[in-house]
Image 1 (cartoon, rainbow, N blue to C red):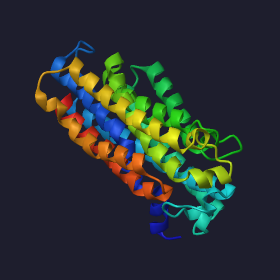
Image 2 (image 1 turned 90 degrees about the vertical axis):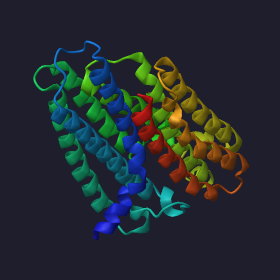
Image 3 (image 1 turned 60 degrees about the horizontal axis):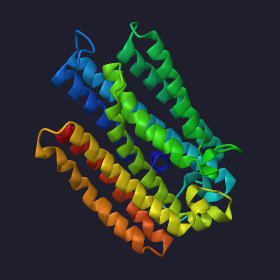
Image 4 (image 1 turned 30 degrees about the vertical axis):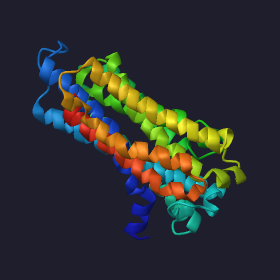
Length: 311
């Protein structure tokens, strides 16, 4: 088995989207702690600790994403969902990686990700915040379970229309608010605004994927939200996702406004508006495949611009 095959199964193009929430959450925490000293602790963490939390959170999130991609490849492969596929090649369905080999890969990446999560939890809380450590350990286990159960098993939630909910919770709220909490040990409600932005844009990527695959998914009883809603309603849903993402980002900036440069994140919404136009005009579903990359990279660009200018 060649390394390039495992890299293909890992779907590296999905990784920038997965770390967007970490970038936003950590930047928000850095802003609160270093610039305003809001009284969370008498002594701020060391710079080394600061970087280690960010690096470990990023590695852990990448692990969750690769685990999800491996499990998705395996689950759809053994169910026959990927036998007729429009997008990038899936390794189990094509026979390049056997189900047994992919299972082994899932186990290995699960162990590595769990180890990374444990080190992250220790680095963030050490011995002073035992119950916080327990909470994040449980969240880590829940993230692993969610990544696997998306397509694996008889009750895979991705086959019953709940994928959007889990993407929003784990890649939006948990990613942003969770990484923020690792630094601050407290939650502020305004953090949920950019967290919702990341969550909505992450759903938008999934929605495009499901719109592209709607006909094929319906044939194999993969009842995604798009299959349940139909094409036209899925388009309206897509507009809603991007609009809410924009409103929430603007709302956060308005609450903390101090300079026009904070609105530079709007640059990232230019390709997203173009994406809305393309979706509105779309007739042939497979043409949406290139739009996935556009929305994913726009989300990553938003995270970078927001982290630099908006906090």
